[in-house]
Length: 326
Length: 192
Figure 1 (cartoon, rainbow over the protein chains, first blue to last red):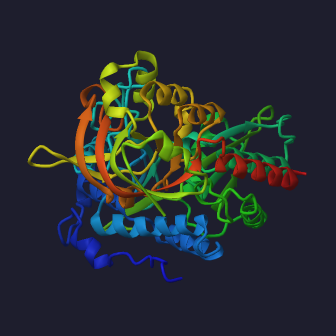
Figure 2: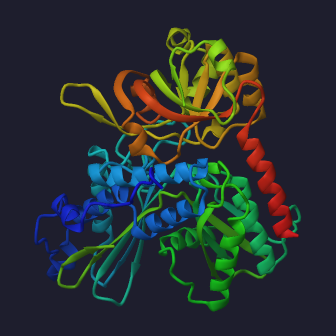
Figure 3: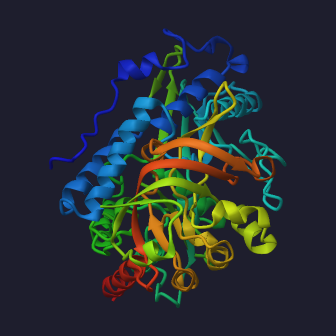
């Protein structure tokens, strides 16, 4: 393995040193209504754009080990690791497509969502100016690009999901979801005669296999799949995306679903699509599935495909104002 | 490993076969969705001298403007090529382009275009934005920046040993076609 790149990232001290948050930063929780989240969110974007989570890196390295040394699949995975090390070292985007920027904010009672949204939007504008994000938000018909990543019509981008919870801390998760992988996502309506999928777990499995074969390398395989069974057309897709936030290697809390995920991951890796569709045994890094309610007449299977460069980060601001990043 | 410098001749391109690993040098011209629609529908004359014998790169870079007014590429990996399927063959023919770099491969119409014009499809590693930006030595020019925005503009760049693999050649060969067929067969077995 002479040419194999080791996935050594910069130390957490180094990451801290490059942080846009001043040393010893504490958010002021005494006045939740006037709390300013702009700076911590900007730091969250910096880390999400340039530093890949460890579980993703580990899975890519494991994939490389499973490929024949010197094969195109092996070399491609090695290039991916090289790229991860470079982006982290230079604090530059891992991929030029910094995606649709999606936030999930969970907060205690008292936080002003209107203010928080303004601050998140400001952080996105500033991160774009610093080239941590590409200006990715254009008017659909004219293609006109305002250049600041803000939706030119309403407040649709960045996407911000809010939820008030009982806990005292604030949690902000971000995902940078590239357009290539978003394009290969799919929603099936069961029964699906074309692929012979009925309204049961076997049918769900067929949908997932079909989607991965159709995606080939176009979603930048090896991919990570979020799959929601049920819901309506909106909530199904929403859930499928949220499932990508789950760390690779963590178990599904439902034992039967966990077994299903593991067996399916192994099956999908026999398809031979491989990294970037070059052929090989590393087609997916993980499949995360969750069952939801449904209307008796509807049975949707919503699949979100995340590229190998699964850029997600979570910021937690504890009740004493201390920020931590995961 | 094969080294090629743009502009490339038809004779050079016809020698390439699927699976060949190539290091590209010289100029590349970036273009993606809006650019391809524009080239097919409006066939602008001014692009002809810029594109003849050149390689088009499907890429929307992250760029940085330097204090002296020049540009740098911060991240510059390939975008999914199949979206240019309706336009690519005609663009190759109109502008005598010798190659396209992208990811994910392209379809039958483009394959026929590659054979007719004498061009190939080069595959670059998707997502390797940092790694590939390092091979960009200089941003030589940019066209339609105001009109199209930075991810869609025609950036003209100079690259050094830009690593790509020929996955569709000018003789009808396509690695993507082979992988697709095999995976479809395997999927049928898994679903049986």
